[in-house]
Length: 414
Image (cartoon, rainbow, N blue to C red; front, side):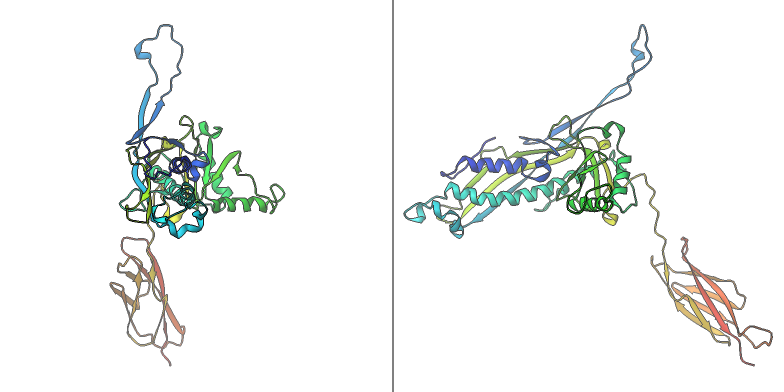
């Protein structure tokens, strides 16, 4: 790739640092969990080859029609998106950093020393590393500076072949058990199989293991990052309550997670120079490209426990509609005389209510959320009870929602 540094005092250490940032400068790459394909200026495909069952009974003279099995070839695309790092600064604001290397003489005609470039690029690289790590995992391509390219989780959510595990468990050991139970047999013994989770989730898992002191480490030592001999990897950018099991490796033949990167391959790749000949300001400009994807969805096993924020939802799972609720008074006391009373009830879906009663001395009618109770007088009877009661059942048409209202009426005096 072409490199054009326009500062005459540039040295090789700066280039080495920038190339490291552009291709391996984030956590998921640094831990060897993703295969990075470099020098991709446009796009590249991840080849995928699947075969059907091949074995059959022996035949002495097989013919073409005896053929069994097939080869299915498909591709996943990596299409790197353009983005950059660009910052302008005044070197004089950092004189305490590069004062030891300042040239003698008039400062107006001095160049920014290579040592100063390295010091400032060190701060730049740390920030770029941090941001790239987040985009590699959670990135979403969009039209603003926060949406540079699609990350691994965004790409995986588009794949209909991924294995989605559902579990209502709150304990990490139970969630890991559910995840492991859905890992294909062909992967379970693969040395490149990893379980990816957030550091917070691992801390929960570690605490659960520590609580079983007879079998695990005490509070002074962290438990091994393993579950049933499957290695656990934590990533700072990984969302909490999301577990993924997949093949992770820097080797294309043994990884299911890929990235394509490039420093822009034109003649203006990295620039470190003055903003203008008459200016004391300098700028750093670094043009990059990146994209991510997974190869096989069936080798990406997900348990997403983030509730309302869950991205990975089983398309075959039946989602039950929530039953609406009815809010309002659950009891009503009536006088002995005849008359009417009204009460208002609110439904969670905004629909009106229905009403029916089991008493012949009480009639109910509705208008939207208003319920009218029309009652007869309860005359004095020496043999009768002091009060009588009825049950009014409220409902919402087209739903199973109900609410019981107890209506009582006092007997008239003697």
